[in-house]
Image (cartoon, rainbow, N blue to C red; front, top):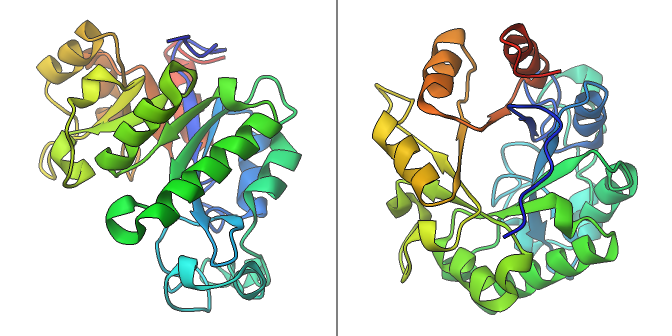
Amino acid sequence: MKKLSYRNPVPVAAHRGNARYCPENTMVSFRSAAALHPDMMETDVHMTKDGELVLMHDHTLDRTTNGSGPVREHTLCQVQALDAGSWKGPEFAGERVPTLREFLDCFGADPDMLFNIELKDYPADSGEFALESARRTIAMLDGFGVTDRCVLNSWSGALNEWLADTYGPRVRIHGYSPQERMGPGQRRFVYDYAYCVCLFGSRQEPVAEPGRFDFCKACGVEPWVYYSVDTPELYDAALARGAMLFTSNDPAWAMSYLRGKGLHG
């Protein structure tokens, strides 16, 4: 499987844009993040009732918009009529839920930008609908010519296995460890098909044990990490154990901290 081309020794992915300061998965959040020049942008894709691809983390509209109910039970027009910014602050009132096409129109032409695209429709919840959502997402990535700069990410192990079986090595798959977090119906060992795996520890010890980083690398898989709140202690421990990429809600802080260690430009 072809490796991604990284600009820095330890890359940083902007999680849902500049999510600490802006309403996640909105264009204002992505533009704010892009201005910082992270290595990668992370976002989440759902398919609407009428087959359009929109960017939202949650399966329902309730937390980040003034709507309610599952994304997949609404049309694009209904989703984009909602306010996706006011929950973060009044200055963001009127921000819309963007489409994947809008996102790629804005950032896909930057040859240095990498993408982590999380597929949020799961076969366990919606069956064939989830597979069609994945097909349409990959077709759009292909159409914009960015698939070679992407990883595809899902918390559904069954969907990850379907991606591996359907698309083979041309699609890089981002998995999770412990593997049990990726739900029921899994048939394969995640390290047999993944390009990278995000390693999670426990609530008490967020950084996974050193042996899990070592095992990941021994399998030829990149160990990535994400912490909901970035701290020097977490970063130092993860770096010492071999973390190869940090996904961050505060990419400016993450890049600055790594820069101070000579690991980011």
